[in-house]
Structure formats: structure tokens, C-alpha cells
Image 1 (cartoon, rainbow, N blue to C red):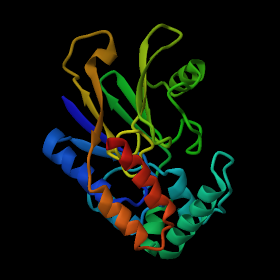
Image 2 (image 1 turned 90 degrees about the vertical axis):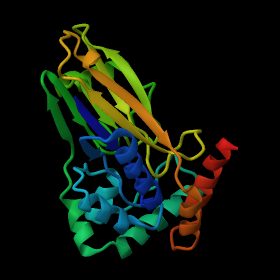
Image 3 (image 1 turned 180 degrees about the vertical axis):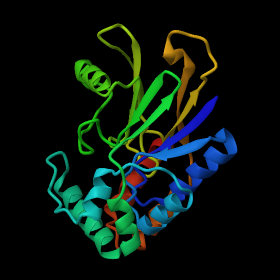
Image 4 (image 1 turned 135 degrees about the vertical axis):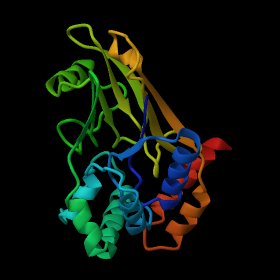
Length: 258
């Protein structure tokens, strides 16, 4: 039996990350934790988040935010964002660039584009956005044919992604009728789900001892949503140079629990 916890999209939210790690230790006791990236931008603790990830030796993928910070890429406006969010995004990324330590910037530059987990005859691919780019958004209603193409091209039974901040578990039938899974694990630090601002991540239990021709009968994925001290994050943002836009974003999602 393998118990895997997978986290993603912390975005500098140290209280959310600490609560998630505690939940994994206390309630799941995972054999291994993996991270799909985006450690930075949106809350003031990017250095502390990276330091904690490093101290726990959590294998981590390079998210699009991590890449932008590591290589000092220019920030381009996204059409899906309002003018307010475009301005806040530029300010928070520049704040990270100005305050990240040299060692943490170097760490981000050395992150990998994907991680493959192989168990018996089960192959699981971890990515940040998609198998093609850490910038590509894969939502729950994504064209199934494109998902099948990604699964078959990478010879994967399961693809696990983040980036959208919206979790789902989607069962896929490939061209040879084999069952596959495409999973988005949501966001630890900046969820877009109407869940009261909880931290979201994945438990993935793999039972290799099961004698079953359907490999997915050996897999139990569970999206985990936990409470953390979101008010600590909101206050921390407001008392920092990170734009208050990100505090107001969390406040809005906190209202969904009221």
C-alpha cells in the first residue's frame, strides 16, 4: 500500500501550507509528499514557503510563477484578468523578485518540469499545468480527446495537475477502452472554489497487492479540503507590500462558508 499526498499552488501562503502538512501527518500519514509548484506570489511568505518545502525534501515541479521568478521573465497581462488584477499581479510578482533570497531563486531555477511515479503496472505523471506547458489550464470540461491524447502520448494511466485552483477527478476512457484518470488537485494557498477558503490537496492511495486487471481499481484518489487560519493570511497580506487585492480575494472566498 502506497499513500501519496500531492499539493500545489501555495502562492506564498505559509499558514495554509503548515496546516496542510499537519493534516497530512496527523490524518493520512503519507509515505511521500509531492508538490506541483507555484510556491510564490500572492502572500508575503514566499521565502518561508520555499524553506519549508526544502527542509521537508518535498520533490517539486516548476510552476509558471516559479519559472517567472527564477529567470526574471517579464510579466505579461492576461486577458482573463480585470485591470485591477493585472496591476496586483504585476506588483506581487515584482515584490517577490525584489525580496526572494539568492538561494531560493536558485532552488526555483532547478525545479523539474514533471515527475513520474511508477507502481507495478501503474504509471502516474505529475505536471503543473499540462503535459505540454506549465501555463496551460486544464479545466474539468476540457475536450476529452485532448486529455486522451495527453494520456496516450505520455503513456500514463493517471495525469495529476494543478494551476487552475479548481479541483476535480475525471474518469477517462481511452481509444483502447482502458480506464484512466485526469485529476486536478486544486490549490493549497489560493483556492477559487466555493468552499470557505479551505486549503485543497490530494490523497492518492495505491494498493499494489490487489489482483485486478483494471489498474484503476488499485487506486483511490480523494480531494482533501481543510480549514486553516485564513485570517492570519489576510492580516499578513495587509501588513506587507503584497497588494491588498489578494487579501480581498481570500475574504471573498471566506464568505462562502458563512
